[in-house]
Image 1 (cartoon, rainbow, N blue to C red):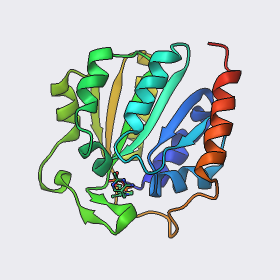
Image 2: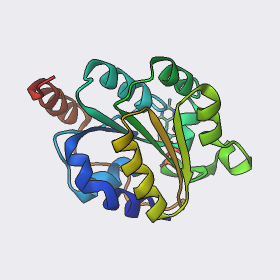
Image 3: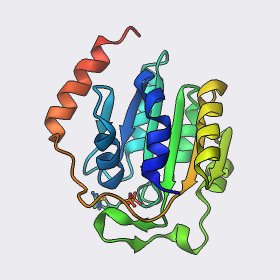
Length: 189
Ligand SMILES: Cc1ncc(C[n+]2csc(CCOP(=O)(O)OP(=O)(O)O)c2C)c(N)n1
């Protein structure tokens, strides 16, 4: 399964959500489908996309927050699942694209390549809804279920370790940050 195909399959639904991604390949892929003011590509702070999403979910309870993460990033901040489960926002879907590697910086293998199961880690941390998917159809179904369930959900999607040739977006962090901030302020909360 290709991450780009997954993103393409749910892209239309993201219009109604507040979206945070990690830096690198996934940010470039999402932006290649078309940037929207409700998309924030978190740069540099590896591992903290879900923490950013959690803060947004708690402060914007009327919005649905979707976080696109990577296995390497989650492994740098594994405690995030416990913190998410502790606060248990009903409006947050955390999608981890697990390509078993640090693709954006050369493709070094991560611990998910040798047995760490992030969906089970999330479940053991107390996240109420978790799923592991490996096909585009099951991915779309899992996302639709999560959006309808109104319950904190972690979806771990096994994807191929391949992505765009260029991993940079053509938006600078500051430009994205200010536009996203204005978008958030425009929301009726
Ligand atoms: C604290 C920190 N360490 C290292 C980096 C460099 N870095 C940027 S992207 C990345 C890999 C991210 O891996 P993963 O989350 O699995 O996503 P993928 O690149 O595979 O899509 C690394 C190590 C960083 N930005 N911040």
